[in-house]
Image (cartoon, rainbow, N blue to C red; front, side):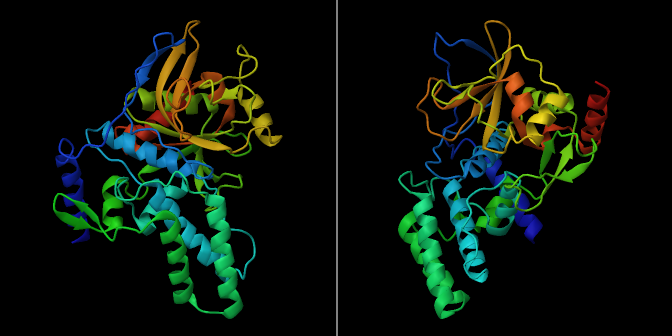
Length: 365
Protein backbone atom coordinates (compact mmCIF):
# COMPACT_ATOMS: atom_id res chain seq x y z
CA UNK A 1 0.00 0.00 0.00
CA UNK A 2 2.80 2.43 0.98
CA UNK A 3 4.66 1.74 -2.26
CA UNK A 4 1.51 2.41 -4.27
CA UNK A 5 1.03 5.71 -2.48
CA UNK A 6 4.59 6.76 -3.30
CA UNK A 7 4.21 5.82 -6.97
CA UNK A 8 0.93 7.72 -7.08
CA UNK A 9 2.56 10.75 -5.47
CA UNK A 10 5.42 10.75 -7.99
CA UNK A 11 2.92 10.60 -10.83
CA UNK A 12 0.94 13.44 -9.30
CA UNK A 13 4.05 15.60 -9.20
CA UNK A 14 4.76 15.12 -12.88
CA UNK A 15 1.13 15.71 -13.77
CA UNK A 16 0.96 18.92 -11.79
CA UNK A 17 4.06 20.45 -13.38
CA UNK A 18 2.26 22.79 -15.73
CA UNK A 19 -0.66 23.45 -13.39
CA UNK A 20 0.95 24.26 -10.06
CA UNK A 21 4.27 25.74 -11.06
CA UNK A 22 6.56 27.50 -8.65
CA UNK A 23 8.62 30.29 -10.16
CA UNK A 24 11.67 28.78 -11.79
CA UNK A 25 14.69 31.00 -12.17
CA UNK A 26 17.28 31.30 -14.89
CA UNK A 27 18.97 34.64 -14.30
CA UNK A 28 19.96 36.80 -17.25
CA UNK A 29 23.44 38.20 -16.54
CA UNK A 30 24.11 41.94 -16.75
CA UNK A 31 25.33 43.22 -20.10
CA UNK A 32 28.73 44.20 -18.64
CA UNK A 33 29.18 40.92 -16.80
CA UNK A 34 32.79 39.64 -16.99
CA UNK A 35 31.63 36.02 -17.37
CA UNK A 36 30.21 33.98 -20.22
CA UNK A 37 27.74 31.34 -19.08
CA UNK A 38 28.36 27.85 -20.50
CA UNK A 39 25.86 25.85 -18.41
CA UNK A 40 22.98 27.15 -16.29
CA UNK A 41 20.45 24.88 -14.59
CA UNK A 42 17.00 26.09 -13.65
CA UNK A 43 16.42 26.69 -9.97
CA UNK A 44 13.94 28.13 -7.52
CA UNK A 45 14.25 31.75 -6.33
CA UNK A 46 17.19 32.52 -4.07
CA UNK A 47 16.27 32.52 -0.39
CA UNK A 48 17.82 34.18 2.66
CA UNK A 49 18.91 32.11 5.66
CA UNK A 50 19.23 35.26 7.78
CA UNK A 51 21.50 34.92 10.80
CA UNK A 52 20.97 31.17 11.09
CA UNK A 53 23.61 28.50 10.49
CA UNK A 54 21.29 26.39 8.38
CA UNK A 55 23.06 26.93 5.04
CA UNK A 56 23.24 23.14 4.69
CA UNK A 57 19.43 22.89 4.80
CA UNK A 58 18.98 25.59 2.15
CA UNK A 59 21.70 24.18 -0.10
CA UNK A 60 20.51 20.58 -0.04
CA UNK A 61 16.84 21.50 -0.52
CA UNK A 62 17.84 23.76 -3.42
CA UNK A 63 19.70 20.83 -4.99
CA UNK A 64 16.66 18.56 -4.65
CA UNK A 65 14.45 21.27 -6.15
CA UNK A 66 16.68 21.79 -9.19
CA UNK A 67 16.99 18.04 -9.71
CA UNK A 68 13.21 17.87 -10.09
CA UNK A 69 12.88 21.07 -12.11
CA UNK A 70 15.46 19.85 -14.65
CA UNK A 71 13.38 16.68 -15.05
CA UNK A 72 10.28 18.73 -15.87
CA UNK A 73 8.79 18.69 -12.38
CA UNK A 74 8.23 21.79 -10.29
CA UNK A 75 8.72 22.03 -6.53
CA UNK A 76 9.67 24.63 -3.96
CA UNK A 77 10.39 23.19 -0.52
CA UNK A 78 10.17 24.67 2.97
CA UNK A 79 13.49 25.18 4.73
CA UNK A 80 11.56 26.55 7.71
CA UNK A 81 9.77 23.23 8.19
CA UNK A 82 13.04 21.26 8.34
CA UNK A 83 14.56 23.82 10.70
CA UNK A 84 11.55 23.71 13.00
CA UNK A 85 11.55 19.91 13.22
CA UNK A 86 15.29 19.85 13.88
CA UNK A 87 14.98 22.48 16.62
CA UNK A 88 12.32 20.34 18.27
CA UNK A 89 14.62 17.31 18.14
CA UNK A 90 17.50 19.36 19.54
CA UNK A 91 15.38 20.67 22.42
CA UNK A 92 14.37 17.12 23.40
CA UNK A 93 18.00 15.98 23.16
CA UNK A 94 19.06 18.91 25.36
CA UNK A 95 16.41 17.97 27.93
CA UNK A 96 17.55 14.35 28.17
CA UNK A 97 21.19 15.47 28.47
CA UNK A 98 20.10 17.39 31.61
CA UNK A 99 21.16 20.67 30.08
CA UNK A 100 24.62 19.73 28.89
CA UNK A 101 25.88 21.45 25.76
CA UNK A 102 23.78 23.68 23.53
CA UNK A 103 21.07 23.44 20.91
CA UNK A 104 23.10 23.14 17.72
CA UNK A 105 22.13 24.58 14.34
CA UNK A 106 25.13 23.42 12.36
CA UNK A 107 25.23 20.26 10.26
CA UNK A 108 26.18 18.76 6.90
CA UNK A 109 24.04 18.36 3.82
CA UNK A 110 24.17 14.59 4.33
CA UNK A 111 21.89 15.08 7.37
CA UNK A 112 19.03 16.46 5.28
CA UNK A 113 17.80 13.17 3.74
CA UNK A 114 17.67 11.62 7.23
CA UNK A 115 15.55 14.54 8.47
CA UNK A 116 13.21 14.18 5.49
CA UNK A 117 12.85 10.47 6.18
CA UNK A 118 12.00 11.13 9.83
CA UNK A 119 9.83 14.24 9.59
CA UNK A 120 8.87 14.65 5.94
CA UNK A 121 8.69 18.03 4.21
CA UNK A 122 6.21 20.80 3.44
CA UNK A 123 5.87 23.00 0.38
CA UNK A 124 7.42 26.46 0.68
CA UNK A 125 4.09 28.24 0.20
CA UNK A 126 2.53 26.24 3.05
CA UNK A 127 5.25 27.08 5.59
CA UNK A 128 7.37 30.02 4.47
CA UNK A 129 10.57 31.36 5.99
CA UNK A 130 10.25 34.04 8.63
CA UNK A 131 13.05 36.33 7.47
CA UNK A 132 12.84 38.35 10.68
CA UNK A 133 13.43 35.30 12.88
CA UNK A 134 16.55 35.35 15.04
CA UNK A 135 17.44 31.67 15.32
CA UNK A 136 20.03 32.26 18.04
CA UNK A 137 17.44 33.95 20.25
CA UNK A 138 14.98 31.15 19.50
CA UNK A 139 17.56 28.53 20.52
CA UNK A 140 18.07 30.32 23.84
CA UNK A 141 14.31 30.38 24.44
CA UNK A 142 14.12 26.63 23.81
CA UNK A 143 17.04 25.96 26.14
CA UNK A 144 15.48 28.05 28.92
CA UNK A 145 12.22 26.15 28.56
CA UNK A 146 14.03 22.82 28.61
CA UNK A 147 15.97 23.90 31.72
CA UNK A 148 12.69 24.68 33.51
CA UNK A 149 11.34 21.28 32.55
CA UNK A 150 14.53 19.59 33.74
CA UNK A 151 14.13 21.30 37.12
CA UNK A 152 10.56 20.04 37.63
CA UNK A 153 11.07 16.72 35.80
CA UNK A 154 7.81 17.24 33.98
CA UNK A 155 8.03 14.45 31.42
CA UNK A 156 8.23 14.36 27.64
CA UNK A 157 4.62 15.23 26.77
CA UNK A 158 4.68 18.44 28.81
CA UNK A 159 8.07 19.35 27.31
CA UNK A 160 6.85 18.77 23.75
CA UNK A 161 3.75 20.89 24.34
CA UNK A 162 5.85 23.76 25.68
CA UNK A 163 8.40 23.49 22.88
CA UNK A 164 5.64 23.44 20.24
CA UNK A 165 4.11 26.56 21.80
CA UNK A 166 7.41 28.44 21.50
CA UNK A 167 7.91 27.27 17.91
CA UNK A 168 4.31 28.19 16.99
CA UNK A 169 4.76 31.68 18.44
CA UNK A 170 8.07 32.28 16.66
CA UNK A 171 7.76 30.37 13.39
CA UNK A 172 4.03 29.98 12.82
CA UNK A 173 1.64 27.05 13.00
CA UNK A 174 2.44 23.90 11.06
CA UNK A 175 0.05 22.64 8.39
CA UNK A 176 -1.26 19.22 9.38
CA UNK A 177 -1.02 17.78 5.88
CA UNK A 178 0.29 18.56 2.41
CA UNK A 179 -2.60 19.54 0.14
CA UNK A 180 -2.36 19.09 -3.62
CA UNK A 181 -4.93 18.70 -6.40
CA UNK A 182 -7.76 18.13 -3.95
CA UNK A 183 -5.97 15.39 -2.03
CA UNK A 184 -4.11 15.35 1.28
CA UNK A 185 -0.80 13.66 2.04
CA UNK A 186 1.37 13.39 5.10
CA UNK A 187 4.69 15.28 5.09
CA UNK A 188 6.55 11.95 5.00
CA UNK A 189 4.61 10.79 1.92
CA UNK A 190 5.39 14.14 0.31
CA UNK A 191 9.09 13.78 1.16
CA UNK A 192 9.27 10.30 -0.36
CA UNK A 193 7.99 11.71 -3.64
CA UNK A 194 10.85 14.23 -3.85
CA UNK A 195 13.79 12.46 -2.19
CA UNK A 196 14.00 8.74 -1.56
CA UNK A 197 16.41 7.30 1.02
CA UNK A 198 19.92 6.79 -0.40
CA UNK A 199 19.08 8.81 -3.52
CA UNK A 200 22.01 11.18 -3.05
CA UNK A 201 25.69 10.25 -3.16
CA UNK A 202 28.35 11.96 -1.03
CA UNK A 203 31.92 12.51 -2.25
CA UNK A 204 35.12 13.99 -0.85
CA UNK A 205 38.85 13.96 -1.63
CA UNK A 206 41.58 13.53 0.99
CA UNK A 207 44.72 11.41 1.10
CA UNK A 208 44.64 10.31 4.75
CA UNK A 209 42.15 7.60 3.71
CA UNK A 210 42.29 5.20 0.72
CA UNK A 211 40.74 6.39 -2.53
CA UNK A 212 37.62 4.69 -3.93
CA UNK A 213 36.45 3.74 -0.46
CA UNK A 214 34.05 5.42 1.92
CA UNK A 215 35.14 6.93 5.22
CA UNK A 216 33.59 9.02 7.98
CA UNK A 217 34.69 12.59 7.28
CA UNK A 218 36.41 14.16 10.29
CA UNK A 219 34.72 17.54 10.46
CA UNK A 220 32.73 18.79 13.47
CA UNK A 221 29.54 19.28 11.46
CA UNK A 222 29.40 15.59 10.47
CA UNK A 223 27.20 14.95 13.48
CA UNK A 224 25.69 11.70 12.13
CA UNK A 225 29.11 10.26 11.23
CA UNK A 226 28.09 9.93 7.59
CA UNK A 227 30.50 8.16 5.23
CA UNK A 228 31.79 9.78 2.02
CA UNK A 229 33.22 8.18 -1.11
CA UNK A 230 36.86 9.29 -1.37
CA UNK A 231 38.01 10.26 -4.87
CA UNK A 232 41.23 11.81 -6.17
CA UNK A 233 40.65 15.53 -6.59
CA UNK A 234 40.85 15.43 -10.40
CA UNK A 235 38.22 12.69 -10.43
CA UNK A 236 36.03 14.70 -8.06
CA UNK A 237 36.28 17.81 -10.25
CA UNK A 238 35.42 15.72 -13.30
CA UNK A 239 32.38 14.31 -11.49
CA UNK A 240 31.16 17.81 -10.60
CA UNK A 241 31.54 19.07 -14.17
CA UNK A 242 29.93 16.03 -15.75
CA UNK A 243 26.96 16.24 -13.42
CA UNK A 244 26.30 19.88 -14.34
CA UNK A 245 26.76 19.24 -18.06
CA UNK A 246 24.19 16.43 -17.81
CA UNK A 247 21.68 18.77 -16.18
CA UNK A 248 22.08 17.67 -12.56
CA UNK A 249 22.86 20.15 -9.76
CA UNK A 250 25.61 19.60 -7.20
CA UNK A 251 25.40 20.48 -3.51
CA UNK A 252 28.76 21.94 -2.42
CA UNK A 253 30.24 22.25 1.07
CA UNK A 254 33.49 24.04 1.61
CA UNK A 255 35.61 26.84 3.00
CA UNK A 256 34.77 30.52 2.46
CA UNK A 257 37.41 32.03 4.76
CA UNK A 258 39.72 33.06 1.91
CA UNK A 259 40.07 36.81 1.30
CA UNK A 260 39.16 36.13 -2.31
CA UNK A 261 35.63 35.05 -1.33
CA UNK A 262 33.28 38.03 -1.61
CA UNK A 263 29.50 37.79 -1.65
CA UNK A 264 29.27 41.53 -2.25
CA UNK A 265 31.27 41.15 -5.47
CA UNK A 266 29.71 37.79 -6.30
CA UNK A 267 33.03 36.04 -6.79
CA UNK A 268 35.42 33.63 -5.06
CA UNK A 269 39.02 33.34 -6.25
CA UNK A 270 42.34 32.33 -4.75
CA UNK A 271 44.85 35.15 -4.09
CA UNK A 272 47.17 33.75 -6.75
CA UNK A 273 44.92 33.03 -9.73
CA UNK A 274 47.63 31.17 -11.63
CA UNK A 275 48.49 28.91 -8.70
CA UNK A 276 48.22 25.22 -9.52
CA UNK A 277 46.21 23.30 -6.94
CA UNK A 278 47.47 19.76 -6.34
CA UNK A 279 46.21 16.94 -4.17
CA UNK A 280 49.12 17.57 -1.79
CA UNK A 281 48.43 21.32 -1.46
CA UNK A 282 44.78 20.59 -0.83
CA UNK A 283 45.59 17.97 1.83
CA UNK A 284 48.01 20.33 3.57
CA UNK A 285 45.32 23.04 3.75
CA UNK A 286 42.89 20.58 5.34
CA UNK A 287 45.36 19.15 7.86
CA UNK A 288 46.52 22.62 8.98
CA UNK A 289 42.88 23.74 9.38
CA UNK A 290 43.12 26.33 6.59
CA UNK A 291 40.27 24.53 4.82
CA UNK A 292 37.28 24.01 7.10
CA UNK A 293 33.59 23.26 6.64
CA UNK A 294 32.21 26.82 6.64
CA UNK A 295 29.33 26.98 4.21
CA UNK A 296 27.11 25.10 1.75
CA UNK A 297 25.65 26.18 -1.60
CA UNK A 298 24.06 24.64 -4.68
CA UNK A 299 26.18 24.57 -7.85
CA UNK A 300 23.90 25.38 -10.78
CA UNK A 301 26.21 26.21 -13.66
CA UNK A 302 29.58 26.67 -15.32
CA UNK A 303 31.04 29.86 -16.81
CA UNK A 304 34.34 31.33 -18.02
CA UNK A 305 35.86 34.79 -17.81
CA UNK A 306 37.48 36.87 -20.55
CA UNK A 307 40.79 35.06 -20.09
CA UNK A 308 39.15 31.65 -20.44
CA UNK A 309 39.40 30.70 -16.77
CA UNK A 310 36.60 28.39 -15.65
CA UNK A 311 34.11 29.14 -12.85
CA UNK A 312 31.30 27.27 -11.15
CA UNK A 313 28.09 29.21 -10.58
CA UNK A 314 26.71 28.79 -7.06
CA UNK A 315 23.23 29.57 -5.79
CA UNK A 316 23.76 31.01 -2.31
CA UNK A 317 21.23 31.56 0.49
CA UNK A 318 22.17 35.07 1.60
CA UNK A 319 19.51 36.95 -0.35
CA UNK A 320 19.87 38.67 -3.71
CA UNK A 321 21.84 41.81 -2.85
CA UNK A 322 24.94 41.36 -4.99
CA UNK A 323 25.77 42.00 -8.69
CA UNK A 324 24.42 38.60 -9.77
CA UNK A 325 21.19 38.49 -7.80
CA UNK A 326 22.61 36.25 -5.08
CA UNK A 327 24.66 33.95 -7.31
CA UNK A 328 28.41 33.60 -6.73
CA UNK A 329 31.07 32.68 -9.29
CA UNK A 330 33.60 30.27 -7.76
CA UNK A 331 36.85 29.88 -9.68
CA UNK A 332 37.79 26.34 -10.71
CA UNK A 333 40.90 26.41 -8.52
CA UNK A 334 38.92 27.78 -5.57
CA UNK A 335 36.58 24.79 -5.74
CA UNK A 336 39.50 22.43 -6.27
CA UNK A 337 41.28 23.66 -3.13
CA UNK A 338 38.40 24.56 -0.83
CA UNK A 339 35.86 21.76 -1.32
CA UNK A 340 35.09 19.67 1.75
CA UNK A 341 32.36 17.52 0.17
CA UNK A 342 29.80 17.40 -2.62
CA UNK A 343 26.44 15.66 -2.97
CA UNK A 344 24.63 14.70 -6.14
CA UNK A 345 21.76 12.50 -7.21
CA UNK A 346 22.31 9.00 -8.51
CA UNK A 347 20.37 10.26 -11.53
CA UNK A 348 23.55 12.07 -12.58
CA UNK A 349 24.74 8.59 -13.58
CA UNK A 350 22.77 6.57 -16.11
CA UNK A 351 22.73 3.53 -13.86
CA UNK A 352 24.51 1.95 -10.92
CA UNK A 353 26.73 0.18 -13.43
CA UNK A 354 27.67 3.46 -15.11
CA UNK A 355 28.31 5.04 -11.72
CA UNK A 356 30.93 2.37 -10.99
CA UNK A 357 32.39 2.64 -14.50
CA UNK A 358 32.65 6.41 -14.21
CA UNK A 359 34.71 6.09 -11.04
CA UNK A 360 37.03 3.61 -12.75
CA UNK A 361 37.37 5.88 -15.78
CA UNK A 362 38.24 8.92 -13.69
CA UNK A 363 40.78 6.77 -11.84
CA UNK A 364 42.70 6.37 -15.09
CA UNK A 365 42.75 10.12 -15.83
